Image 1: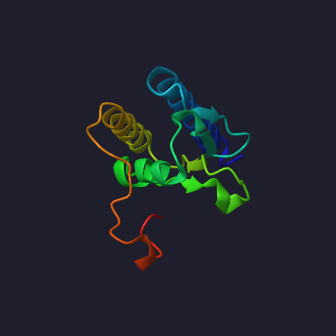
Image 2: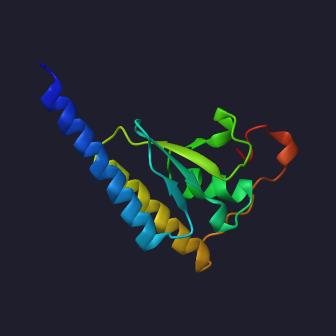
Length: 130
């Protein structure tokens, strides 16, 4: 019984974080689908509603929004628009990440940024468009 209070508080904190993410997505990025975690602190997202290519999605998530999401193909998911997020961090970090994502999406939609390849020669580097 020595860790029950800590565990209850942590589970409550994680639930509040999930609720915040769900509300933020519904309010600011409704074309992204979130799958609520089932007993973990891993959230799956389906970005297919953004209608981006795999390369554009990676550029948006990793380069523009600076998010550390894990591509679904690491876990056997064949669709490139699925990614997973570990929410075992402070809510401040989560909020900052989603604000960056919303800002990057807005910038893309208003033409301020492009998500096209900037590689001179894609064949010259295996990491060029990763």
